[in-house]
Length: 596
Image 1 (cartoon, rainbow, N blue to C red):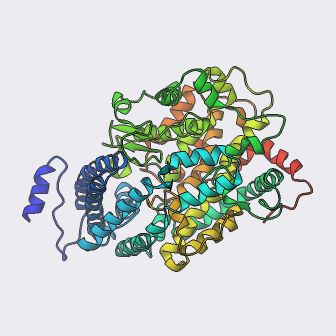
Image 2 (image 1 turned 180 degrees about the vertical axis):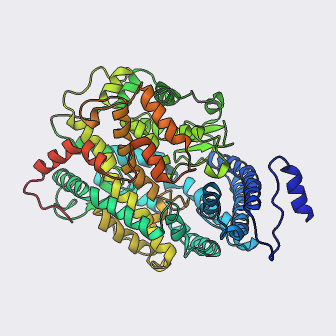
Image 3 (image 1 turned 60 degrees about the vertical axis):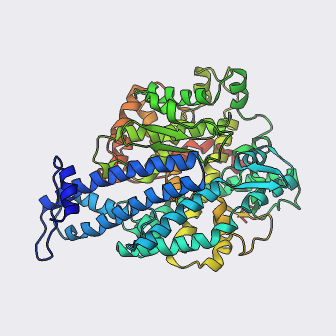
């Protein structure tokens, strides 16, 4: 036994240590179990160290903190890739279900699998950290006047000056071209790592995480899209007619795609900021920003509202460290990555969110989303480390959004944020459709682009062309100006430089309604699905907790069945929820030429 293995065993006496298996030996199940206990202990320590480094980098963004995070990330990459290759010696054993899942998860756990070579691994970690850092520091500057993404987001949401919106949109997208060559190199390195683990490329690895063959999963995603596509196309047709009437047919064609800069969001992925233009004249949106100002509710208190929703379900309050260590507002003295995220630093009690909160309805919803991650993390913390994840990544993203669906007008009245519910239920529901339904094609296409990039079907010379082809195909959205290959518009979306898989958000957009319907039934709700709030239902909370506690220890259809009684993802609940909107859009679009 080598000195390195002896030292590792000395630190892991309570867990046992897997002695190396000589090439001539047939490994045993006992050796496999000891190997995974040792592996999980090693990886858990590295995950915690990497999480702390990533937190510091994201909240104190400097070249030094980028290097510190890159080193910690490289250590995780190296250990995970090494352990995944070592675990292959158990591949042919008749393993118990838990060990077989751990073996699979070990191979699938890295979004950017590192090559075995130390130099290439270090290069991949460095590029990954630098890309996210470049995005986090991104600003649009005119002479000495520089605007952060927060500033630009506010302009995109509030301005109706088409020329100003074009300037802001173009200015933000100008941050991305310097990332292009680095991103192409990242693809090369990560693909090499994926091939060493037995996958065709990184996209093949990502699609293999769903308890089904990669090709079957891709088909499942497109099946779900076909269910919701007609509703999206109806919303697109309706929005286009109203925007064309406001801006004129020369700026918004009555029959063509929507201009990307006129949809109230930097990526045209959600249209909820256009309520003044897109809601019926007879009703308006709920203005939570005014309620927050009137009641002097600050950013921290907005998070308290989210916590109180979860505790109303019978779940525990967040630990004191959450309130001490989270980042709720953009600091004035340093650069930070403001993209909202939830953190489980030590895989036990050190929970945090990182978010530059704005006092509006959009961020109030996002708070519930991020806290959903934290409460999921608490629920599965007693499981072995490799199972401390959601059933699949769409479950994690969908859970907080499920809670946000219960932020109904009646709930807002109950907690004192509204004096009375709107007389007409359609405007708030249509506003939610402008967020949820408008997002669906964008949630799908981001990884469609990356899967093609990783597979080599799209070469670096065609990055931008294919990005806009897919946006036209799925979203019916076009750029406001010609976009050549000297640009890199995908890089202007956080999840591309940060290498965060995106199909999870599309799945979450479907699952949240499936979850919501099941929880509303448990809570005894009567009436249309969109009027249900599970606030205060301990029965719904107990059912939710049972699913969350499963983590990823069982295949996701079992977790879905535990919550909903169904074993297949399905958009039926979404269509039921938005049935009044569907009927309204059908009437409004009568006689219009839809499609693009």
